[in-house]
Length: 153
Image 1 (spheres, one colour):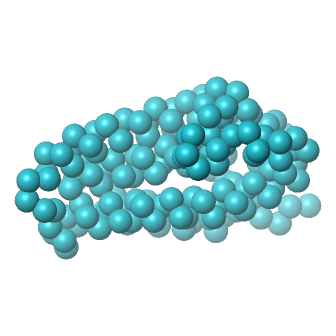
Image 2: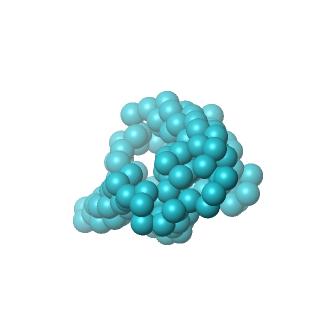
């Protein structure tokens, strides 16, 4: 019998994302001349995040859950966007948060968005323990496909 679905990971994720979304722009000012660059970069990075989120949800289908523990009746997905990165949804959230922070030219938001990489790396590590327990061929998939950032990490 499973004792947790990973609720604490979801709670911390919600807090981090709320902080990124709501942190005031006035705490640390954006360097002069970088505002336009931030906005353009934010739009591009945010769009990449939205694409990864949409493709992840489509590829997961009925396997989609907010919790890191896989569904009891789920199956392993390795096709589509999952052929390029094992946790594309996490990558999409990171890009979306970073894009939002850049768009708002929010220095603290950018730093918090970069902290999401560390958070999702640890969350994915916990999730992958459950995935290896559930799917015997997950270890082979781990060797073939990058964890969090397509083609990089």
